[in-house]
Length: 155
Image (cartoon, rainbow, N blue to C red; front, side, top):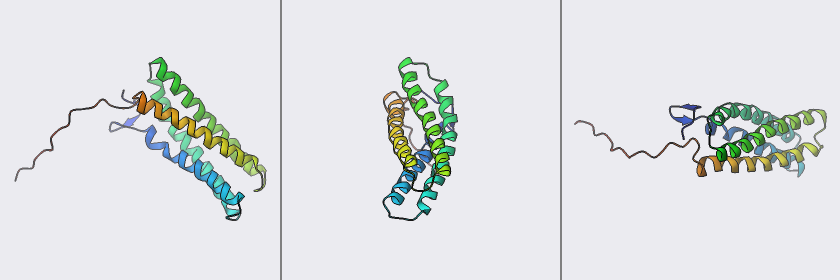
Protein backbone atom coordinates (compact mmCIF):
# COMPACT_ATOMS: atom_id res chain seq x y z
CA UNK A 1 0.00 0.00 0.00
CA UNK A 2 1.41 3.35 -1.00
CA UNK A 3 1.38 6.42 1.21
CA UNK A 4 -0.27 9.69 0.25
CA UNK A 5 2.28 11.78 2.14
CA UNK A 6 5.40 11.17 0.09
CA UNK A 7 8.13 12.86 -1.90
CA UNK A 8 9.39 11.07 -5.02
CA UNK A 9 7.61 7.89 -3.84
CA UNK A 10 9.36 8.02 -0.44
CA UNK A 11 7.05 8.33 2.61
CA UNK A 12 7.64 11.48 4.66
CA UNK A 13 6.55 10.22 8.10
CA UNK A 14 9.45 7.73 8.48
CA UNK A 15 11.87 10.46 7.41
CA UNK A 16 10.77 12.69 10.30
CA UNK A 17 10.26 10.29 13.21
CA UNK A 18 13.96 9.83 14.06
CA UNK A 19 14.13 13.43 15.28
CA UNK A 20 11.61 13.29 18.15
CA UNK A 21 12.71 9.77 19.05
CA UNK A 22 16.39 10.71 19.34
CA UNK A 23 15.73 14.06 21.01
CA UNK A 24 13.40 12.65 23.68
CA UNK A 25 15.76 9.78 24.46
CA UNK A 26 18.69 12.20 24.67
CA UNK A 27 16.62 14.46 26.90
CA UNK A 28 16.19 11.57 29.34
CA UNK A 29 19.90 10.73 29.05
CA UNK A 30 20.72 14.35 29.90
CA UNK A 31 18.46 14.16 32.95
CA UNK A 32 20.23 11.00 34.10
CA UNK A 33 23.66 12.56 33.57
CA UNK A 34 22.64 15.39 35.89
CA UNK A 35 20.76 13.15 38.34
CA UNK A 36 23.69 10.80 38.86
CA UNK A 37 26.19 13.65 39.23
CA UNK A 38 28.12 13.16 35.99
CA UNK A 39 27.56 16.76 34.92
CA UNK A 40 26.43 20.16 36.10
CA UNK A 41 23.15 22.04 35.77
CA UNK A 42 23.78 22.63 32.05
CA UNK A 43 22.53 19.05 31.51
CA UNK A 44 19.08 20.06 32.78
CA UNK A 45 19.07 22.87 30.20
CA UNK A 46 20.12 20.40 27.50
CA UNK A 47 17.30 18.08 28.61
CA UNK A 48 14.78 20.91 28.24
CA UNK A 49 16.04 22.07 24.84
CA UNK A 50 16.17 18.57 23.37
CA UNK A 51 12.70 17.92 24.77
CA UNK A 52 11.41 21.07 23.05
CA UNK A 53 13.07 19.97 19.82
CA UNK A 54 11.38 16.59 20.18
CA UNK A 55 7.99 18.27 20.60
CA UNK A 56 8.53 20.29 17.41
CA UNK A 57 9.77 17.20 15.57
CA UNK A 58 6.81 15.17 16.84
CA UNK A 59 4.37 17.77 15.57
CA UNK A 60 6.13 17.82 12.20
CA UNK A 61 6.00 14.01 11.94
CA UNK A 62 2.33 13.97 12.98
CA UNK A 63 1.15 15.80 9.87
CA UNK A 64 2.23 13.23 7.25
CA UNK A 65 1.43 10.47 9.75
CA UNK A 66 -2.16 11.68 9.97
CA UNK A 67 -2.39 11.97 6.17
CA UNK A 68 -1.24 8.35 5.93
CA UNK A 69 -3.71 7.31 8.65
CA UNK A 70 -6.62 8.85 6.74
CA UNK A 71 -5.82 6.67 3.71
CA UNK A 72 -6.17 3.38 5.64
CA UNK A 73 -9.22 1.17 5.16
CA UNK A 74 -8.45 -2.29 6.59
CA UNK A 75 -10.05 -2.43 10.08
CA UNK A 76 -7.12 -4.29 11.67
CA UNK A 77 -4.60 -1.82 10.30
CA UNK A 78 -6.80 1.14 11.29
CA UNK A 79 -7.00 -0.16 14.88
CA UNK A 80 -3.21 -0.53 15.17
CA UNK A 81 -2.71 2.89 13.54
CA UNK A 82 -5.19 4.47 15.98
CA UNK A 83 -3.25 3.10 18.97
CA UNK A 84 -0.01 4.34 17.40
CA UNK A 85 -1.50 7.79 16.81
CA UNK A 86 -3.11 8.11 20.26
CA UNK A 87 0.16 7.19 21.97
CA UNK A 88 2.09 9.69 19.84
CA UNK A 89 -0.35 12.53 20.46
CA UNK A 90 -0.21 11.62 24.16
CA UNK A 91 3.58 11.80 24.01
CA UNK A 92 3.48 15.31 22.59
CA UNK A 93 1.10 16.34 25.40
CA UNK A 94 3.20 14.53 28.04
CA UNK A 95 6.47 16.14 26.94
CA UNK A 96 4.81 19.56 26.66
CA UNK A 97 3.58 19.25 30.26
CA UNK A 98 7.03 17.97 31.21
CA UNK A 99 8.69 21.02 29.64
CA UNK A 100 6.27 23.30 31.50
CA UNK A 101 7.07 21.61 34.82
CA UNK A 102 10.76 22.22 34.19
CA UNK A 103 10.08 25.96 34.02
CA UNK A 104 8.09 25.88 37.26
CA UNK A 105 10.45 23.69 39.30
CA UNK A 106 14.13 23.71 40.06
CA UNK A 107 16.68 21.34 38.53
CA UNK A 108 16.33 18.94 41.48
CA UNK A 109 12.67 18.10 40.69
CA UNK A 110 12.16 14.40 40.04
CA UNK A 111 8.66 14.52 38.50
CA UNK A 112 9.94 15.74 35.10
CA UNK A 113 12.50 12.91 35.05
CA UNK A 114 9.80 10.35 35.89
CA UNK A 115 7.62 11.76 33.12
CA UNK A 116 10.54 11.39 30.72
CA UNK A 117 11.00 7.75 31.74
CA UNK A 118 7.28 7.16 31.19
CA UNK A 119 7.47 9.00 27.85
CA UNK A 120 10.42 6.99 26.56
CA UNK A 121 8.69 3.74 27.60
CA UNK A 122 5.54 4.81 25.72
CA UNK A 123 7.76 5.79 22.78
CA UNK A 124 9.01 2.19 22.65
CA UNK A 125 5.43 0.89 22.54
CA UNK A 126 4.55 3.38 19.80
CA UNK A 127 7.63 2.35 17.83
CA UNK A 128 6.60 -1.28 18.15
CA UNK A 129 3.17 -0.41 16.73
CA UNK A 130 4.75 1.61 13.92
CA UNK A 131 6.93 -1.39 13.10
CA UNK A 132 3.81 -3.56 13.09
CA UNK A 133 2.20 -1.22 10.57
CA UNK A 134 5.16 -1.16 8.19
CA UNK A 135 6.94 -4.49 8.54
CA UNK A 136 4.00 -6.80 9.29
CA UNK A 137 1.01 -5.06 7.68
CA UNK A 138 2.94 -3.46 4.80
CA UNK A 139 1.61 0.08 5.26
CA UNK A 140 3.48 2.56 3.02
CA UNK A 141 5.41 -0.27 1.37
CA UNK A 142 5.31 -0.51 -2.38
CA UNK A 143 4.88 -3.92 -3.95
CA UNK A 144 8.04 -5.55 -5.21
CA UNK A 145 9.01 -4.69 -8.73
CA UNK A 146 10.91 -6.75 -11.20
CA UNK A 147 14.58 -5.80 -11.11
CA UNK A 148 15.68 -3.81 -14.10
CA UNK A 149 18.97 -4.31 -15.80
CA UNK A 150 21.36 -1.36 -15.61
CA UNK A 151 21.50 0.67 -18.78
CA UNK A 152 24.71 0.41 -20.71
CA UNK A 153 26.41 3.50 -21.99
CA UNK A 154 27.34 3.70 -25.62
CA UNK A 155 31.08 3.73 -26.10
